Image 1 (cartoon, rainbow, N blue to C red):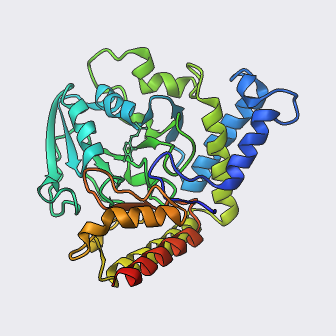
Image 2 (image 1 turned 180 degrees about the horizontal axis):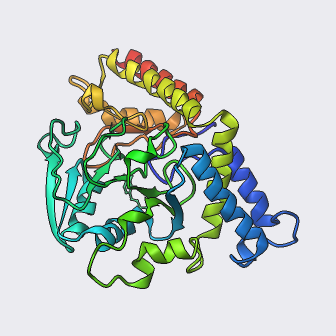
Length: 356
Ligand SMILES: *Cc1c(COP(=O)(O)O)cnc(C)c1O
C-alpha cells in the first residue's frame, strides 16, 4: 500500500533527491567510486559542496555579505555555539516551546538571558505578541516554526538588535528576507536533507565581540575561514541537500514551494475546522504550514487511538502527536505531495462518517 509520510523529522524528502543520492552512493559522476569513499578534499566532492552553497544562496536569495556553512552537531549544537560566540552580557530569547527552551538553557551558561515573551501559559498554542525587544541585548533569538506545537511565525520581523532564528523546520518553505536576520540556522532533517548536517547562515560582522576564549571547533570564524572544511564535513548529507535544492529550483523556487505548502495546509485546516470530531490546537493566526496539530473533541475523545490505528491501516505514517500535545500532528513539509494530504482528509472524513 502507498505510504503517506507525515513524519516530523527526519521526514519526507523529494523522491528525486533520494534517487540521485542513491546513484552517487553507488558511483559518483562515473568515477568508479562511491560518494562515501572519496576524500572530502577531492575535486568531485569540492564541486558538490560549492554547488550546494551556491544553490542555497540563490534559492533563499541570500545577500552577498552572508556566509553559508554546513556543520555537524545539529541545531542543538547551535544552541551552545550561538551564546559561546555572541553572548557578551545579555541576550533576549522568545520562549515558544521545547526547542526555544533548550536554546535558552544553553545560553544561561554564558550570561544573562532575558525571556522577552512566552506562551508557556497555554502550552505554547499561540505565539507571544506585543512584546518589546530590548535594545541592550547582544542578540534576540527566535524559533520561526515550533515543530512540536504547530505554531509558526510566517513573517520576518523588524529587530533593533541582531536577530537569530532557528529555522530547522521551515527553512525553504517560504521566501525569507534574509537581510532582517544576523543569523539563520537549523538541522537539515526536517525540510532540507537527511540527518547529520546543520546549515548556518550568518553575517560575519556579528563575530569577534566576546571576550571569552572559544574552542576552535566551536568558533564560527574557523568554519568560515575553512569553508566548512576545517574538519571532515558530513559529505553524504550535504549531497542530498544539494539534490533537494536542485528540486526546489526545478519547481520554480521557494515562492512556488510556499504556494504548494499553503494549498496543502488549507486543505487540512479546512477539514479540521469543518469537522465535528477533530479540532485544531493552535490559535488560527499562528498556525504552522509545516506541522498541523489537532485532537479529537468530545464526545469522541475516547476514539483517539482507534483513529490512529485506522489511519495507519490506510497508509498514514507519523501522524501521532508529540507527547506534550497529544492527539495528532501531520507534518506537511515541502516534499509531501498534496495527494498525501488528500488521502489523510479522506481518511478523517470516512472515520467521522463511520462514527457519527
Ligand atoms: C528538530 C528541531 C531541533 C533539533 O534539531 P537537531 O538537529 O536534532 O539538534 C531544533 N529546533 C527545531 C525547531 C527543531 O524542529
